[in-house]
Image 1 (spheres, rainbow, N blue to C red):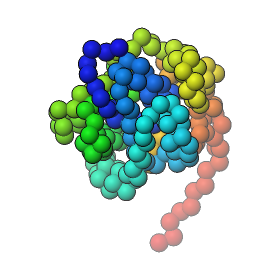
Image 2: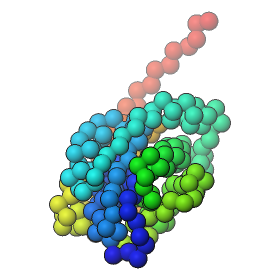
Image 3: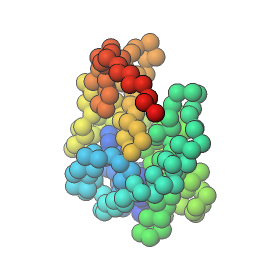
Image 4: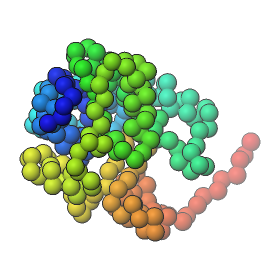
Length: 226
């Protein structure tokens, strides 16, 4: 159990593998109440059953906020106008949403009387910085818990084993181990075979589109008439 005293934590919850196991992990290691906060930013049917799943995992409460309008108005439209593209290819679909989620997470923590916030970002990427700088800017008194920097879990296989041991239902499996992030702007994948840059993405990853090999090569050209 952690030496840091926490009574109530608000977790940025997506219902994916990482945040699903964070709920029982926080209860085990911090002996605290866990409130799950989920931002609807266009995940669609991924939100189905989210509340029941979080409560079954040990959360005391689930708060879902529909932020699609704010996300489009204050984040996506300025992104489009600025033409922001990372390294000429990546359209910033995941990163653009993180400050908005963190902003509302802080508001929920203050409304719920929580003394801490938590996220499921790994300890090797930039998302942890996006979340935590927002926390510190808006309410520096809140404690920040980042399980991936603390726990003994080192892989998604470890996370799946933890989920099984704690009876946490998750959609991921050893055969489909990708972590997906979906919102109004994009759908991204990471983990699994993608950790090896020499391997091409598998066909099963293309949920909204098709791989170049499977895509139609038929193109239609219609000259302008005016």
